[in-house]
Amino acid sequence: MSAMMISQVQIHDPALFQDYLAKSKDIAGRYGAELLARGRLETVLNGNDKPAPLVVIARFPSLEKLNAWFEDDDYKAIIGLRDKSSHQEMTAWTLIED
Image (cartoon, rainbow, N blue to C red):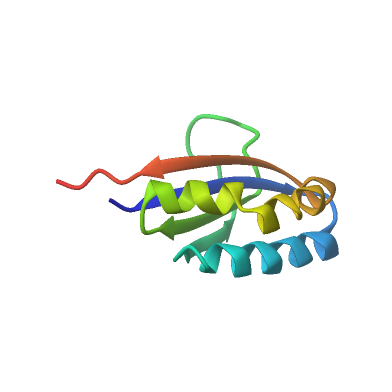
């Protein structure tokens, strides 16, 4: 069953964030990740009046692959870069397939 990583992002340092994003994407690719969307907030239609201005959505072949990416030593090595460049609320979701 596929799994999604959804990250709501507030960027503090755009140049550092681009470096983090490129490295993270490369590492996630080893686990079969596919970037589905990266978009900017335009309008709050309902709910939270202060959502993150950027969302990143990636699909992994399974929750196990998603967790393996997150626990990968190479990914752990760039967590400092992630945290210096941005604040992220990252969540893992499994897809409901009817």
